[in-house]
Structure formats: C-alpha cells, structure tokens
Length: 236
Image 1 (tube, rainbow, N blue to C red):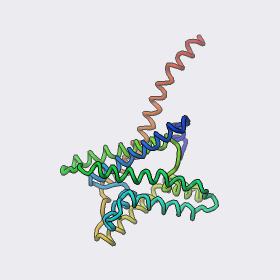
Image 2: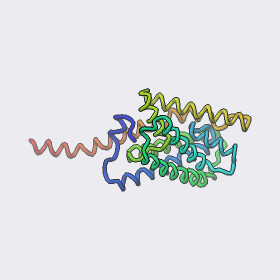
Image 3: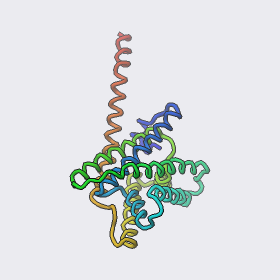
Image 4: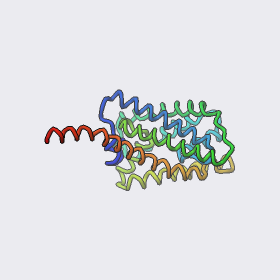
C-alpha cells in the first residue's frame, strides 16, 4: 500500500491480526470523516461528490452502494489498463471496498442529527472531518494491507506510464470532479457538492497526513531515546 519511501517508513510489519484491526479501524474513521464532511455542507471530496450526486439522480441506492459500484468500475479499468498483470488476488480489494460501503452508510445514518446553520461552524466541522478522514487514511497506510480498487487503478496507471504518482492522482480526482459536475448538470440542472470545501479538502487531507507522519516519527524517536541512552551508558 505504501506509495513512497516516506510511507514505507511508517508501515506496520508486525502481527497480521493487529494490522487488520488497524486497517478496519482506519476504514471506519475514514468513513466517519466523510460523513461529517457531507453534513458540513460546504463541499466534499471528488469521489464523495460523485457518489453523493448519484444518490440524488437515482435515490433507491445508498451512497455506500454507489461507492462500491465505483470501486467495481475501477477494478475493471485496472484490468483493461494492464491485463497481463491482473491477478485473481486483485479481487480481494473488493473486501475492504465492501466494508467501506457498509461503514459509510452506517456513519451517514449515525450523523443524520448533525445540522449546522452557521457557515463558520460548518467550515470548522469540515476541518475536523478532514482530520478524521486523513487519520483513517494514515491508519490504512500504516496497516499496509490491501489496496482499494481506486488506489490500485492509480498505481496501475503509474506502472503503465511512469508518470508521477501525485500527478496521476490529481488528474484522476479532477476527472471525478468533472464527471460529478456533468452528471449534476445533466440530471439535476446544477452542480452539487462541489464548493469551497472541495478545495479545502484537497489541501487539508494531504497536510494532515504529513502531520500524522511527523508525529508518528517523533513519538518513535522518543521511544528509542532511553534504549540508545542505555546502550551508550553501557559502552562507557
């Protein structure tokens, strides 16, 4: 799951059971953050804006269901981009995708009571929501287990083209925004869920994850200090 050296430094290589617990907890916290961002009502991430828009276009299906459908599409596109590298085990990515869909619908239900009128409170809620979302992502990166189909698709594009991973991810997110906007205009006569909060989300989530990386390294460095000190004292 780690996309670069910085991420590889913080991955957990210990017990598989512990890593799965961390991973599932990460998914839950991520979906809690997504649901709060939706309740803030000032704009949401590209992926959420697309799936949320679809719930208005065809209401019988939940956002979690649309999110799972999107993951299915991404898995199929992953196969089309690089079929010779596609393995049967890639279908395992649908397990966390399904868990995410269930948790998302659950958290949307649990946060239905959150209704804020004041704009500044709504922005504050979005800032908190992005912190939660980013922490969930951080835990999932740390667990270093199964990639979601969307991340797998971006990684496959990276492998096929050699372009910078960050540029591919940015291009992918922008594509989702365009699709979301076009669907909104075509079926609802207006663009939904793409606002200033969408830009704020794009900035904050990355910065929060960097912060969590920094704090994790800082905590680990402090843990190592007494050990190193004892070794030095013994050597003397």
